[in-house]
Length: 142
Image 1 (cartoon, one colour):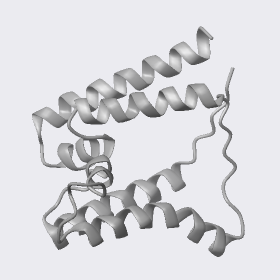
Image 2: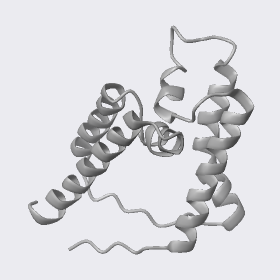
Image 3: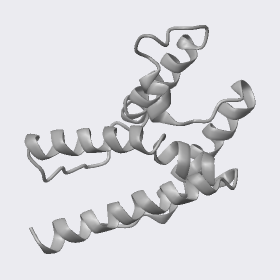
């Protein structure tokens, strides 16, 4: 059995920061903070006047753990109990799901639900159900 600790304060702060970032991006650019779409448009043929903003957004995602390390002197302990093959398959399935679902958890789950999008509600329910099923199978059948 895998033990997972719940940290309500850190979860609340993290969720508020994600929400604030999504609101600020919408306010500043009129764009939805769908990370998969932002990242995908860093590659050709999408180089346009918004390229620098997309690059800064993704750089901020990568720089955030570095900032935490600099401020606190350590990073939260993370354990990945999967081998390289499982991680590669998981990454490919996640990418495929983002393309097939026309967005990811940030685009549908954070921004789409806040705009009361029915399409985002269906997408969010689908990836939440798939995530729960995956955790159940990995914890009880493997």
